[in-house]
Image 1 (cartoon, rainbow, N blue to C red):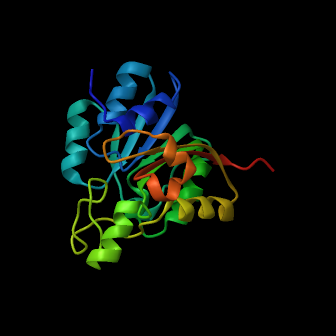
Image 2 (cartoon, helix red, strand yellow):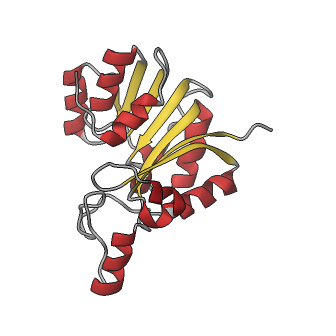
Length: 202
């Protein structure tokens, strides 16, 4: 059994057995491997890093070497039950366009990202005057793959703008724990944000 960090445990719990799953920026394939072994899903991944693509293949995960900035237009509408975008939304040039594509090819999107509005990040800006770093954002500003950082409020505003319905939201701290205070002020106290989203029914 593959151990998953708490963030991915929550993602896995949102996916029903036998579902069709596409993981965008699937990394080394750990989550997809877990889902195949434990939930019998039909799983496919897209990943840009050749070393991670090789690791996926070693695990037996169906993976395609692809750049998310070039879109996922090759997939037909509603090809998947769930499209996962875990810690990758902030690493693409056009997050709004990718979200639209996520909900074109999938019945549901599962999105996770680091919240730049987290209180520790704000303090680093205020007192150090430098780009913040932490467990959810470990890179220096000059070497980070993250190019479109956002807050919880930013993401929810984008969903509203795109006509996207938020089905569920979970928030975690740096130790991947949830606390009641996060629901009182999610933009301030959530370090990692997780969302289930769907298209608005018209």
